[in-house]
Length: 272
Length: 253
Image: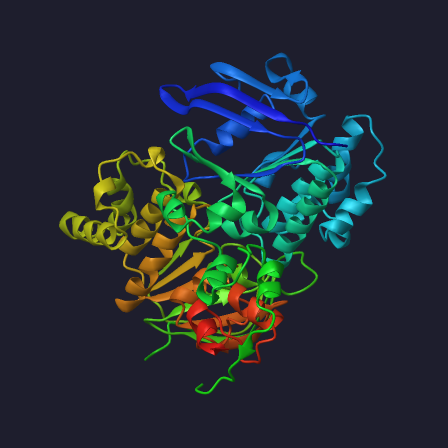
């Protein structure tokens, strides 16, 4: 499915007396890959929950494609927006990994032909017959993500998709996100993990205390140490390497850094 | 120095599992070290923590064979999700941090002192009068570590303690680990985050499929940090530098 544009206009939201969103406006084009960053409690997760009608704004407007979210129920929103929660246990319930992943497309009345491919893509084929709670917690997170990908949504919302994952699992998530992005899917990822953002995001929207405080191309922000420090962030290791070696072209992804390091002459290790 | 925990050829299998989670693990954990246990999901790092602290099989069940000697008097364990470790009974951080120590029946003055020292060590003295239920994840995790420290463990095991934290909070939490170890406590840290572990570990054990595949002093055991992986891909000859400063030193100008 091709991507949808997402618009958030002047949105405010409060949990009781605690204001979580204090007037947020954001326009995301179809097919963009946007990372939402910022400290715990900045309002990132709240904002994404408005996109799937799990929360309703106190004021302001949210649209996904030509749908006004205010007029839609969460189950309708699921046709357009796939939402992977930070804690996978919130969205797993079937008796096997395979059934869990197939539940979404089945519920939407769609074919489950893509389920095996998604299981394979996220490295879950070997555990497809197990109960979701019999696989380790990080793998459960991939099961939940697979369930979302199997629905082929036009907008993918990922809340801390790499938290707790090991290196190989992270690589699979990065590859899966890049594949969806290449197919035109809009990706919105809430993430503390700037290394993931560097690999899978084009644009970074930073929030603090319920407001958007930065909205910039990822490549630009990653090299702006002052802005990162203000946000309580450090550049990812790839950018640290690039800075230390004075690489050209502002590489942020690992393969870009390796490419920019071509021609370097190495010293042998002398002291061990 | 006497080891806090000694494992020899330890094999541990969870009830109902077809394969052991730890398979022939031998290692010691000493006072004052920050031992990082790294490995992919399912490699056995979390299980190693449970076995080394005595929680497995006593609490979680399963079967253990081989030799395990735990000479540590008290082992504190901190998990990834701090809200699962709150008492739910305390209305201030001060009470929460003191709760475990008080449950040992120590005199109130000693309990208060232990709690104050632990809060200072974690940099959360300013939170003492706050309601634990209203803290951020990063603050809460430091409260949990402080509460564990206040009980006076000589070994502190942490299972991916920054999994739920933002980068600033994660850095702050990792930064206190060398100080805790410096006071003589053995710190056992299971983590998938080798880049952060590289900054604090005095020793690194790598596990694969329940077996120890590397056990050494950094840079040994850190061959998979982001910098090391980039250096290898860019053609740097082994041994690969594991941090930016080491990488820079290897480039011929």
